[in-house]
Length: 576
Image (cartoon, rainbow, N blue to C red; front, side):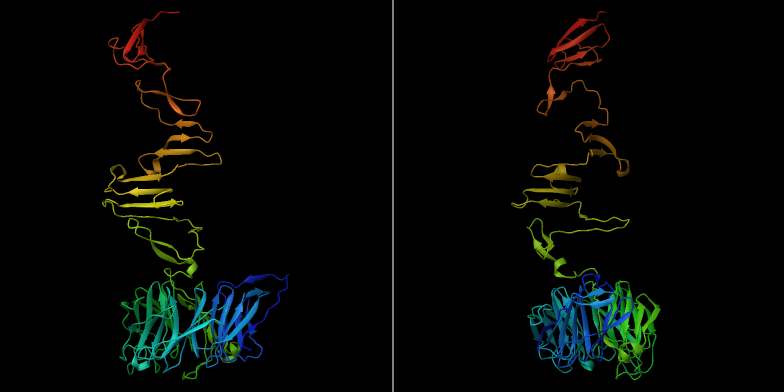
């Protein structure tokens, strides 16, 4: 029997919860036991009828689903635990599925990326094989063997998938190491980096690497005779070009065994590395490449450990016959930025009966530049030559962008253009409906001082090519403010929620101005039958400038009435 699905029943009255963000689970290096943590450390025996599980090597998490590779060797299988939940502080799951891995042996690395599992193997002296598996249909398996040539043959430790490419570091010991980049469809293979063969800078079999914020971090060791405490970091761009390097870094440990980097992660800009033989853990700043802290942790640490979102690292001890000391493996917890915060979580006897683990969930932190999955990814789009290249969601099920935070700070969406001289320099936000570009659109823009439309220079614009509505509701007013500075803006015009208009500044006197009124239609019109009385000086003559309806009472004993344009009459003032 090659495939199996086992439903697990749930009691309806027992509350279940999703796996927490910092869920820890590790597999046995010798057997079918899993250890996980809820309110305490608990055990789960992984059983599949008709299948003997000899070890659990890799564990990957996707939401509430767990994917495991078991039986490291020629009989690898892939196991999926679907919809894992915590009920009464115990791990349960809806179903378990498994399948033999038909095209790959000795699987040593597995990652989840955009709906698929990607795998690589470790068989010294053979070309590396990559695998691609649908975790929800384990029969869908694709394999690709790298070319049978220099750089593609050797041992790998870590597989990374980043921005649509697979990266793996292949080591040939004294013959050098090579970083290989392969596209997800296995059609393009590139060798983008090599260390050469000098003993003073060597990547031995096999060392880890990490990708963080579009940069690749590769750790190397000085393996010259008599040197036992020198490591270094090379930083590359994602095409393999070196950006910077640390030179030699001196660890705090020395002795008769050279460093052997075995696990590596980057969290909050700090590189964390553990060494297999001389048993240190060190922290290096990812920008300055300064070694900040290094201590002896007293055991061999495996190549898959769990760095949690709160910054605590669960270090899995591994029984290693190649280690001359072969100290008992334990489970340790340490804070990434303070190595004095170190506790023993499980002693050797309770951690897989002294055999240790070769894999727990290896949470992947890639910084803030790689999207977590294709649902959040952006792709380039060229709207037209005027707008240039833009970004849009690459998944048709994503309909917009959302920013929501609870903090006392400035959040939101900003558009800046620092060019103030160009004749098309502007920054804008536009929304539009169906139809040709630049139609059915509304926007907000700011224009630079050199903009080709003179009246728009150094100004902002709220515009639309269709009817533009300005609205408020819940009985709120619309207020227009101006002033010398942002903090001193004052009301100048208010449209009150009941429809009345309020002018906050008294206009200057101008008797030549028209008088406006509201017609029955609601339109504002100039009134021709409204008398305007003022105390302005008397007209100089009967044909002096005047507007029909204007009345002047200058106090000289007469009242002057303009009966038509520039046509004045006067009458004497008499008492009642």
